[in-house]
Image (tube, rainbow, N blue to C red):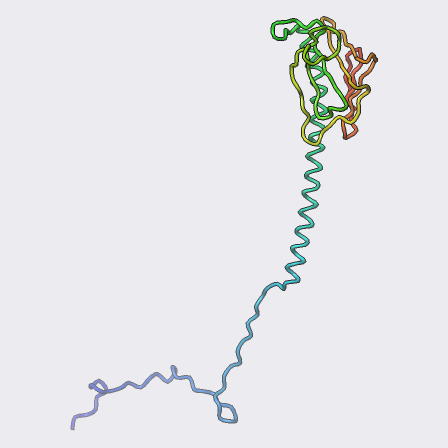
Length: 201
């Protein structure tokens, strides 16, 4: 009889004992199993979402209000400084004897203000030399508009005209006064006197 050889066909090798894990039984004969591990699900409740949304909206409204207020303040400051520069611009046009459409203005150049027209003022050439702005008779150099949110709050007189006549230049204020004042709606002022001194307050 041929001796048994495990290499012969039909032999089923015995599995490795280390790979077989014995089942553990409890006292009642049931297989022991590990209890399921609870899974923690993280999230937000509806109340929490509403509270966070309300906080974000509140902070956003505060920031937008501050931003808007800052923009208006900057616009008013720019308008104030531009007004003072336009006084100097009218003076320079007069001193340089600048012609307007081929005609030398008899009364120089000036600025015109009216309290009913708060959002703008006029730079003009005093062609007829009466030291006042006459629409249709004098030359309109520029209709200067303030930025949005900036207006004239008060004038020392209305209407108010300040003209500069070369060569000194001579400064005329109508109605007649030594000083003219333009106040913007933020309370700040531009003053000019007959000596040519321009002040920002």
